[in-house]
Length: 150
Image 1 (cartoon, one colour):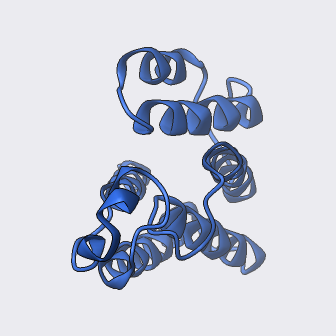
Image 2 (cartoon, rainbow, N blue to C red):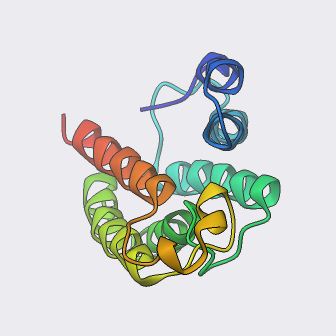
């Protein structure tokens, strides 16, 4: 499980519209810098990879917790992986825990009013809907967890 190339990042940057392309592209560029073409990762390396990618997203999007963005999921996932690493859990167990955290965090965006991104133009009408970026991150974490079990 490793990102050995920045090709997916550049593809996202070049082909995906809106903020998603640049944000996910930034995530994968920063994550790939940590892995340096490793063919497998330890939990510590996975944590660093996700943390670096998430930091890139936060810096690029200027989002803060509670803004109703993908960062509302990335930041708790990073914290979950840090805790799992400190507890010396297996990668599969760490990603299972991260999935639970991601699911709760994505669901929590339903009650938030968007303060960043396109949804912020809706004002109070953004309340009652799960943030699409948060949902995308949830799906990524779920796919990582499923892949780790293969």
